[in-house]
Image 1 (spheres, rainbow, N blue to C red):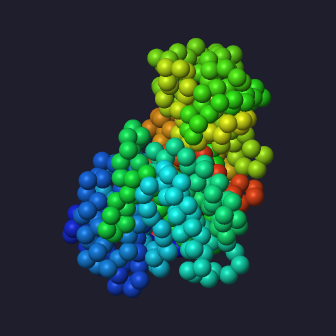
Image 2 (cartoon, rainbow, N blue to C red):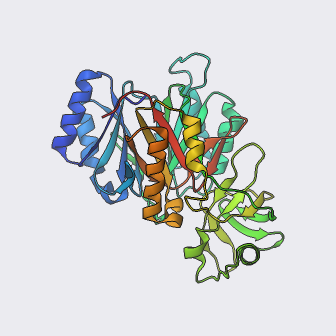
Image 3 (cartoon, rainbow, N blue to C red):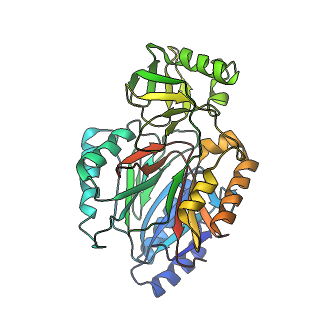
Length: 379
């Protein structure tokens, strides 16, 4: 699946040297590129280098990269694919026609490569500013049934300002999606380690990623009361942004991990905008985000992945980082590398994560880690 990886400055010389080497040893190689937001302006340099060497390119912009247990905000992480994965990348997924086209094109990828009866992985990266991602994921479930195993992450600016955060060798795309078809692979894990409290609420009014009502009342009023009664925190409109990351909502489903939604904006009418769509009528609870010590996230991932991995591609939620702080994130990533048994961990801070539920349908999360094990030795 992944044959090699390198963290390089986005400069013509180092890029050309790496691409030329991969092209020579793997004549049909392509690369997946992870670019930190601070370096997004250099994407044309990367595109030019890939075109020059005839290497297919797919990539995305994230708030920061992960290198071992550290954050990196410079350079590019190139992940070499022995056979460039069949892919779809396009913008304009905030409208029905774009969604239909994207789902249809992704479905057609299943016919490109025959990997036998086991479902291949549809690895997706979406623009985090899409307000209707759940709708797109439901289209996957309705139209594509069990053709794929789903896993993915969201890209974009840490400020959630709209930017063209997806790209191929020629163009950049905004409000879009990128899908790569990867071979069947068991070493995949998505976890957040949250424990569910007992006080539940009903989402009585919502539109896309905005919750207007909980239990038939203005959303923020109910949210405030739940936090005060359960956790003793007197949240106000002024402290909402800094405190809400520690008290996300969880949408409950019997078929998947609780789907975490971090509130990120508060309107004058007390409606709350979240990272990720929230369906009207959903059952929700207010969570207290755990510390590293309180969470079993790392242990669950290590148990799921098993031993013997040569490397680990990890997407770590930026909201989880905001809750824990840089030092604790580094600690958690370090524990993950130790428990999985590989020092070769690389990836990016993500703005939402995608897994499959028990029926195989894709679902969206916040505050999670997405891990794909690398079974071949990477540099």
